[in-house]
Image 1 (cartoon, helix red, strand yellow):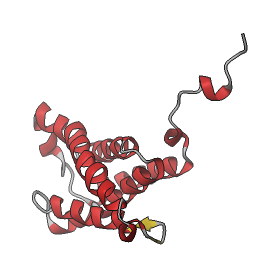
Image 2 (tube, one colour):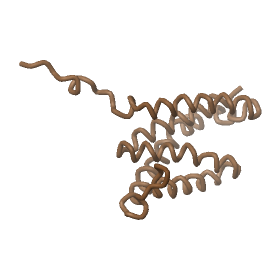
Image 3 (cartoon, helix red, strand yellow):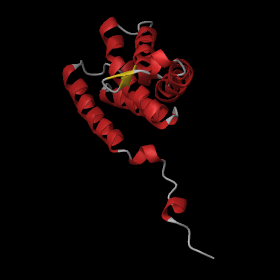
Image 4 (cartoon, one colour):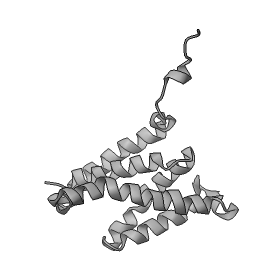
Amino acid sequence: MTAPTEQQTDRTPRWLTDPQLWIIVAATIAVVLALRYLLPAGYASHITVSVTMLTSTILLYPVVEELLFRGFIQGELLRHKFCSQRHFFISRANLMTSFLFALLHLVYQPPLWALAVIVPSLVMGHFRERYHSIVPAVALHIYFNSAFVLAGVS
């Protein structure tokens, strides 16, 4: 019997070893520090008032939003040649999905804050396309929301 190859024994998903991912993780830490400094203390404290709100913000919303936006909407848009074209490494499908994602956030956030979600949305869309999976996008969304809450509690 032969020994398993390195590829057979390493079960780490490829996206977890992607240098781009770790650049995003580091950049998020920098953004969290900036938010903590620039925004009023406790700006996210309302999220921690109940376990339901906290769980929804950190787990439920990321999963549901990524299934809808990166899974369904971006996935369907990518099936069309026009939407799969790229500009500066960003597909039109990702741009359109991120715009819709920001519009959704207008429902419960001020306009500038809703617009601010475009950048993380583009990042999540990039990883969705890069790995043909919403799993990296869900993981990043959970990370982004967790960082936002952590930065905004007193």
